[in-house]
Every structure is written in structure tokens, then in C-alpha cells.
Image (cartoon, rainbow, N blue to C red; front, side):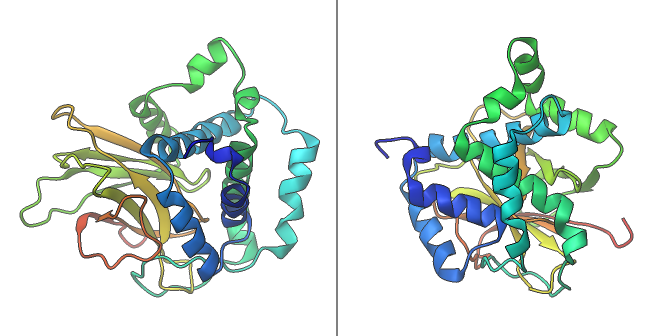
Length: 266
């Protein structure tokens, strides 16, 4: 794209609607088509902006502007079951409005803040920016130390060297994927995509967790921050697939790279 993704009114509108009320099948397809025109750096900017906003918002450093708060709240009455099409894993029951409110608020605030470009003022300046701009590894460690995060390991798979785990916070709807042995990808040919199965949904489709890339820069741990695109009330499994550049709305799961299943009762 020759201009910033924030200058694409249709893309911005679809991102906000995805976060606040969900997309129709046609809208989801249109968003996927628009995503194809984004560069890898622009996709990374969107994902990283949302992750940074979540950290800063959780820290509660500054009140959200009243006009922005009203814009987000205004969408709340229209909130219904999410209609965005994603890949199917297992049937489940639908979230009630009360169950999904906290996660939906965070998702909506993150996307609206991201597209409006207000997040730098939320984070602050100087030492506050340094505090938020921690490495993914440091943020993951702090999330684990909070005591509220879910941690599940990648299940062993035949002919797969991947080991590691998933850390997910059901309050902020953010988390971290940790890999060792995951192959590097060429984002021009394919990208990794995360899916989150939610046992609290009536639809058999898991939630899109976004796309990411792995660079060929060493043999240590690879840590990827993520945020659920829709509220996840009862995570049942985390699945990583390899998809076309930009990701897909519905995955055939032909190339499943890693699976982490949440044990019942956790």
C-alpha cells in the first residue's frame, strides 16, 4: 500500500466492526481481501499496536477520552453472537452477554484505539514508554507471575520438532505463544495463523488469533504475542496452522503445525 493502513477508511471500518459487533460472511471476505494488500510490516504494525494498547490499558495509566469511550459504548447495544466465519474445531454453546462483556470491551477498545492512533498518549512518554516496550519474553514472564493466566503445552506430533507452550490471560484476552524448533517461514509464500477453540461458543468455529512470521535467526525460543480477535470465554484448544499470506477466514487445516489442548477443569 502506498499510504498508511489507517488512511484506508473501509479497512478501518471493518476492523472496528470486527472488534465491536462481528462481521458478516461477505464483510469477513472483504476484510481478508483488503489484508492481502497490506505489507508484512503493516500487518505486524496492526498486531503490535493492539498488543501494546492491551498492556498499557491494563496498566491504567490514563483515563480514556470521553468521546472515544462514547464511541465504543455506542456499539454495545448492537452486540450479538459473532458472525465472522472461521475454521471449525468442535461444537460449543454461545457466550451470554455478561460472560463476554469484559473480553469484548478489551477487544473493542484495542481496535478503536489502534485505528485512531490514540495509543501513544495512553502509554505516556519517557520511562513509561520504556516500561511498556518490554520484550515479549518479559511480558510473558509477568503474565505468568500474575497467577491468572492459563498455560498449556504444545502436544507432541509425529515428525514435528516443535515444543513450547501457550500462555493466555482470559481477562485481557491477550497471550503469548512460545516455540522451540518451529521452522522459519517466507511471508511471501505462507504465514502461520493461530486459532483458539472456545467451548463457550455455540458455533463450531474457533476464534482467529492472527497471523505471524518466524525469522531464521537462531535456535532459541520464539515468543509471539497475540490477542484474540473475538472474546474467548472458555478456551479449549490453541491450534497453529500454515496458511496463505495474510491468513484465511476459514482454514481447511491441511497444514497443522502445533496443537495445545486445555484439560477439562483447568
